[in-house]
Length: 286
Image 1 (cartoon, rainbow, N blue to C red):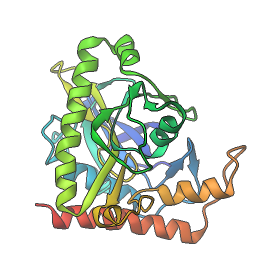
Image 2: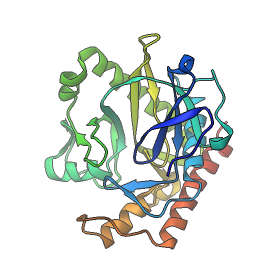
Image 3: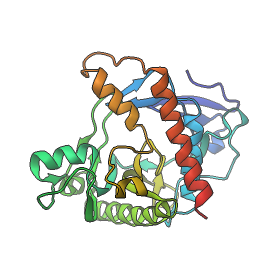
Image 4: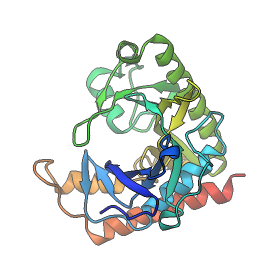
């Protein structure tokens, strides 16, 4: 269910976010991005929602935007409406690239499965003998092609990215992604965290022609954070994200038909993980 927001009208809903355009034609270059409490996994939106999830995503995204060495899509031209204060962003409309810019510093998730099958991730050959959760010698850029709602995103090679958006844009997105990942990893480490992997999305600002960072960044929905102390003890699966949800679904659903409703304890545990990540980053890192 979308919100009724004074001065704005709903135009689109994704898995987690709802988009609104201004009723004022002079603000047609802006978009209101509202983070809902919906949670998705395995390309399905699940029930029930995770309380306060939208606020946690927005808080973290804004916190990161203030610290990252790259231009972002936030606009201060008009305030966030009071109806969605704390979980929405007024942003510049961008011409988005259809590429999810995934960066991995550790082997996990779908990258682990691909490595086991092929010895590589998205065409990047990796050494033999890596283990789940193992650190790579250096972070790697492993892009995906963004699917329509309900379809699976497709892992692709860098060469395929070049085919889709051209060499200059592909090289710029790769460089920006790796630069942001390095900076974010430094900040996460100050909070006793490891940034295992994440994804970024970029677009071109029509007003300037520059490539701009958009969407959410470095949240539990788009990233995999681990406790550094736990990782050093050899623990690899306890992450500050929705992995709890993925694990429960993997054990209780064969991925055919509609997914089952999440039990209350899974919702509670996921909510706690999101809240803890926000607290650790925003209170322990200057």
